Image 1: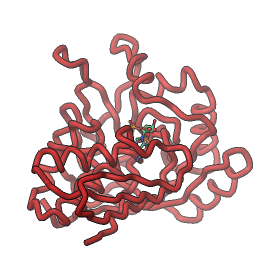
Image 2: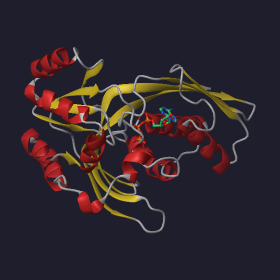
Image 3: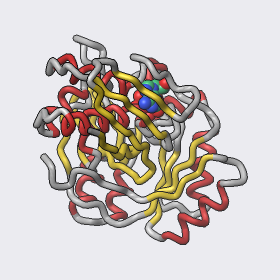
Image 4: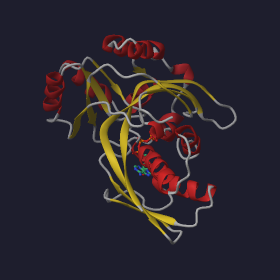
Length: 291
Ligand code: ATP
C-alpha cells in the first residue's frame, strides 16, 4: 500500500511573539499563516518489517532519526503499536532552513498519509496535537490552510478564503537556524508588532489592502540585524513594485505580495540578477473540507 502526499511551504502573513512560557521556555505565538504552491512530495510505502527508512533527493539532509519525517512516522508507530514499517521518499522543492517550514511540512505529510494507510482514523486536530511533539510548525502544516495560529503553535483556527494575490519568494544565499534566532529574541527590544487583528479582518472582508496593512514579523529585526541582506532584499521587492514585503518565519526568505501577476513577474525578473532562488507562486490550501 502506498500514497503520495503534497507538503506545501508555509509563509507567515503575521508573526508575533507575546511572551515566553516559564515551564519549557517555548514562546506564545500569534501568527497568521498560509501555504503556497511550492511543495515537497512525500511518497509513503508500507512494509511488513518494522523499519522506518527515509530517503531524500537533497544530497545533504539527514535520513535517520534527525529527519522530521522519520520522527513523525516513529511517533505514530509507537503511539499506536503498529507492527509494520514504512519507506519514505521525499522529493524536496522547498529550500531548507529558509523560514518556509519545509521539514515541518514533510512531517505533517507523513502524519496525514500514515493516518490513511494505517487506518488510524484521527482528525486533523488529533494529528496536530501529535505534531506539536515534533516541531511547533507541524500542527499548522497538518492543516496547511490559512489559519490563525496561537499558543505554542498548537492552537489552529482556520480562517476564510484569502483575497487573490501572487507571492514572490526570494531566498538569499544564507541558511538560518531557527533556535539561534529565537535565542536572540528579546521581548524588551522589540520595536514593532504586527497588527494580527487587522490581517484577520482583512481576510474576512476579502480586502487585500487591509490584510497587507496589518502584516509584520517580530523575528525580522532579529534576523536582519545579523544578515543585512534581508532588509536590502525587502527594499528591492518594494522598489520593484510589491504591494507588501516581509521575511517569513525566522528567515531568511523574503516574500513579496502582489495583486497583479505582471508586477510579480517583473519582480522575479528583476531579482534574478542577484538572488538565485526566486519563485513565483500562489497561495494553496489543503484540507479545505476536513476538520
Ligand atoms: P522552522 O520550521 O524550524 O522555522 P525552516 O523552515 O527554516 O525551519 P527547515 O527546512 O524545516 O527550515 O529545516 C530546519 C532544519 O530541520 C534543518 O537543519 C534540517 O536539517 C532539519 N530537517 C529535518 N528533517 C527535514 C526535512 N524533511 N526537510 C528539511 N529539513 C529537515
